[in-house]
Length: 105
Image 1 (tube, rainbow, N blue to C red):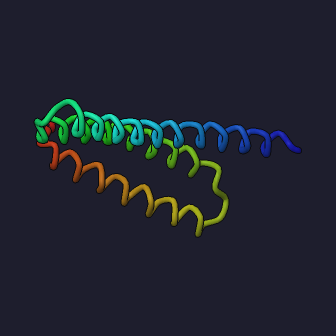
Image 2: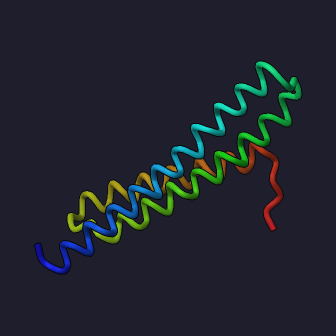
Image 3: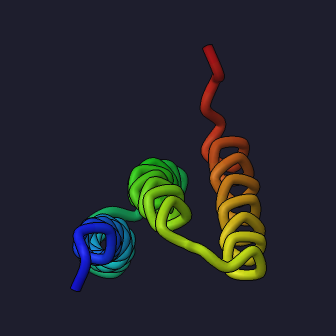
């Protein structure tokens, strides 16, 4: 295994760790929101805003992982597909910001 292949493998490994961290944040946030909705709180608007904030946080990790993984992609089709996924996730993050009612500074 050459030096470049070792670096590519390491970057992919880091990218996957960051991606799964983002997915974990989103999954835990959804579980917390569901538990609060079912057992503790009935303020749906507050729960929705907190869930949106946490989902945006997790989505930022996933977008960062996509950008990291794009650095080691060698095929133009894989890079284009990855770019499309990043674009969709950025639009989703923007929609979540609007849904949660955040003010952009």
